[in-house]
Structures are given as C-alpha cells and as structure tokens.
Length: 178
Image (cartoon, rainbow, N blue to C red):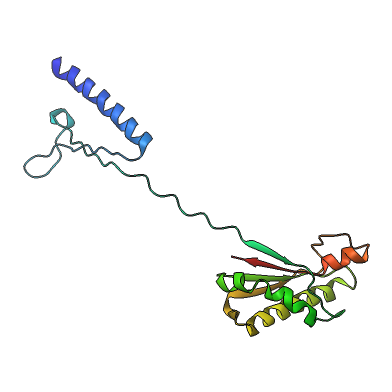
C-alpha cells in the first residue's frame, strides 16, 4: 500500500511538473525507463526512478520586423504630353532623393497617368515614364539591378480627373524604397 501511495504521489508530481514545463516551453523532463542488464525495458511496475532534466532557456530575441517601405511621391515631374521624355525642369526634383536611393536595397519606380487617352495607351505610357526615371537614376550612378519599374496607368488616381489640377496630380511617379 505504501508503495502504491508513493507511486500515485510520484505520478501527481510528474504530471504537475510536466504541465508546468509545457506552459513555459523552456523546461523539459524525461522519463528514463528501467532496463535490465541486456538493455531491454522491464515492466513499469519494477521501475523505481525518474530522471529529471532541466533546460532553462533564455528568451530568444524576437525576429526583426521588416521596415515598411518608404514611399516617395515625386510631384512636379513633368513629361511632354503623350511622351516619356522627362522635361529638364524636373531634374532638380529627381536629384533631391539621390542619397536615399543610394542607400536603399531595393527601389520600385511606379508610373501613373491621368485618365486622358485609352487604358492601354495610358498603361504603356506609365510604364515608359517609370523606365525613363529609372534610366535617369542609372545615369546618375544608382545600380540598375536594385531598381524595378511598374506602370499603373490611370488605375490609381489620387485626385479628381475632372479638373486640370487633379489630372496634374495624377500624372506622377512614386518610388518605393526598401
């Protein structure tokens, strides 16, 4: 009876510690089964010991959170109507961001248009304008391999296309820096 009572108390103790270990996920316990001289397991009724192993772990550093891309809106970049050629008056605006672009790991240049013209031509025009800005930056020493271009055409307006001022805002270049 005394052995049975000790066995029950032992099981309760093991169950409590195992539950605690599971909750903390930093400690573990290992049951060492009894073995005979040949290394074979013997019935649990003949086993009289537990082996406890403790592993205290230090909390791991959380994984770094990827920085959200920085988005630059290059307002005032001017192109001739229906053209992807950058007007010289826009060079100063493009130059303002050179330092940030040189430090960036990846740059996505996105071209947008207003709603004048048809969808297909606006898409091609926005892609060509983004490529023109990329070429400008390549000529200024930014690595071609870290830049990609996209054209969105008239699909993402930021202003009302019913006014000239709104259309001018929608004809833009956005740069995502990562």
